[in-house]
Length: 489
Image (tube, rainbow, N blue to C red; front, side):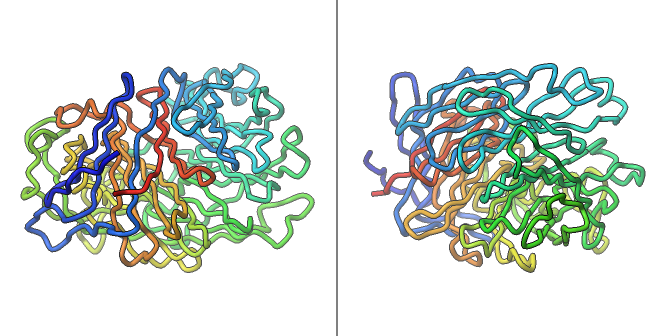
């Protein structure tokens, strides 16, 4: 594929058709959008790299989140009551097996449930999938019952074990050594009343896997209030990840605008208990950014066919990190900063009310100290504007949702699902103080400059390090996208 001539104020476009599959990749390399603001995006010049949409697998029963096997051959994707194993090819995705959530694996006291997060074991023998209460009667009274984690064998997706965990299990991670898993029990209750001191706190479940997935046990680890800037009585872990040495668990506390670090003992006791885990929290901080903040998607100043960058204005929001990734060297944490619930709940910092616009960034933190090392500024939104993609201007903009990280050609790259733009961004975060936008890959060409809202709403994203590919799960589209990383020209 020949690379198009670069334009000074927008990303270059590459368009190709494969049968009925449209391919559009918005390449952001040279020049920034002309803005009357001091904040400008920094575009990577080397190494030349771009993402190429290779295939979209449709017709999945559910596609909320996904996990990739260590060898890069398979991805498990889950959502609703559906679990699917997908084979990853060089330019195709193929369904290998499917499974439906059976009644015997519903949480106790629930008549309905849904799959949420999942993780494939390091040896590729099984996948752990979180099961969250979705019983309307329970949810209506904010009385969600504790969830479960169910183990399914691979590649046939047969259930082989289950264990009860905390309320609202969301994200799942398995330690690289295969000895334990961590579950983020969000227990979100009423998000519009987070100041309620009677709200139940979320927790982290640590599942002991040393006796195999058929004999799992778990302990719940409480998250202390220390250094949580908002709603400290109600920590709500969102995404959980485990360090490469299997010694540390990290979890974003999205609604609390914090990150929890949980240190494990050198050796897990035969019967783990909560007292052996040391928990500390990092304040994610607030951010003043610039962006389009007026009107709903497809209306007024928020029409993707006629964005006006000069209307971008300053706003201040809490980062409220959702997605989380750990750099390969273990030194940095990368977050996708998505939410706006501090504003919904009328929070302020130093007497200044926080906006409902979300920071629209990815951020990099020191994994030891929690110090903020850098963020992406307004580069994500500027690339979305240049590409003519949708976003929710009066809320969270493109809405960075989940992030994955990988090493390519000696550079550390962050891959970010942009839920309200039907796209992913790629940033070079090798130098956290100088994060650079590498590419914007459009997953759904149909929404480009259409004044329509996102139709796929990508959420799960994983870098396939064994193959230099990226896979993305699209909940609203019931689909999965495959992106190949190729050399630029």
